[in-house]
Image (cartoon, rainbow, N blue to C red; front, side):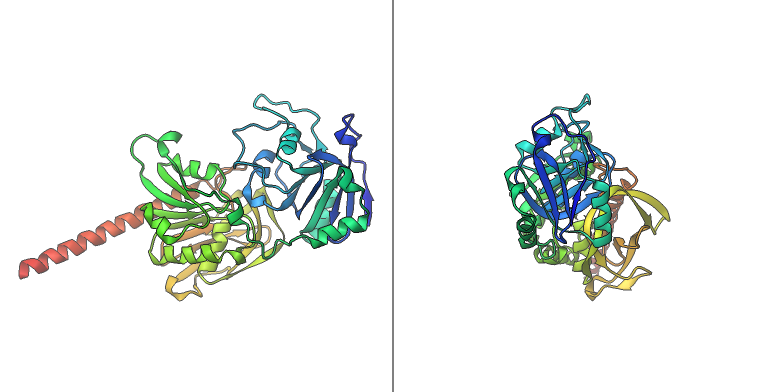
Amino acid sequence: MTDTNAVNEPDVSDKAATPAVLVLEDGRIFRGTSYGATGTALGEAVFATGMTGYQETITDPSYARQLVVQTAPHIGNTGVNKDDAESRRIWVAGYIVRDAARRPSNWRSERSLDDELVDQGVVGIQGVDTRAITRHLREHKTMRAGIFSGADARATDKELLDQVRASAPMEGSRLAEEVSVDEAYTIEPKDWGWEGEPAFSIAAIDLGIKRMTPIRLAERGVRVHVLPATASIEDVKAVNPDGVFMSNGPGDPATADNQVKLLRSVLDEKLPYFGICFGNQILGRALGFGTYKLRYGHRGINQPVMDRRTGKVEITSQNHGFAVDAPLDGATQAPEERFGRVEVSHVSLNDDVVEGLSCLDIPAFSVQYHPEAASGPHDAAYLFDRFIELMDRTKQAAASATETKNATDSKTEDKK
């Protein structure tokens, strides 16, 4: 089935006159013109509902191997700059927009989005009905897709569809190691406005971490040792952390066996743990719960979530296509019994998806969304403070236990 849509009047540039086609796995086809690099892009078609923050979206490593449909119609109007990038490169596999800005207009703009896409080899398509694409994905679920432009778009519809159907699905994809850093690095609080010595030190496992996440911690006095996705418990202990953090990231959490093993070791050590997004799914798996793929996922900066501890509703930034399968109501014994009881701490108000886990007998919690707010609202910033409070309580409890033990030992020695 083919849709010929004329959402925009053709631009006068050569690129806007270059044919491009979006082919979905189920045979639906949308025709437009080239945007960014020309060629072929294959991946999972998903839609993101943010009205702003397109640069943060495309540089979020969680979007690796995905073709992102922007539901906001006008994209590229504020250009791009080095400060708003959330990682070292653009990670979206392809980009789908309705009205691409002909030129950027913003005092912070350093170059056009189109030029950035070209330089990084990201194939896109413009002039398509993104409303129709979004509705199709909502009704039929996210699916494999391909963007073909220039000479690559001249193949027959069947040939293009065959390429899409031969591409790798997101289920079973192990991608965190592909987007993670190769070597560890450290973010110092003093570089982000903190005066005095660091209050805490953590090991942050980079599964696709966004730039603002360790910065939000550093602003609160936390020294952040960012470690690769392949880090072991020995690597974690080597930085002598007060806590451990696992970041967002792409791919199927069912493939993250190495990270699950690491987290179980962390929990056995009673080290305070905080995870977001992929880190929430890994905590779920470490506790013994399963994960599953959502029909079309949560991607945007306007997702409502209830914090069950406070009854407060947060508007959150999210980007995930998988979720934890855990009982929604009340405390339950973790399937991995040595970790004690756990409860669902946060829940989506759109579809009751698990949005957070809180362990009741060990110092660990996680959420399914992005409290760093890059881009997005700042409603969830308190979660960084909650992690710091958890580390503080754990450290004080350990110091008190040591003091009690020393006093007991001293009395025993005196009796002798």
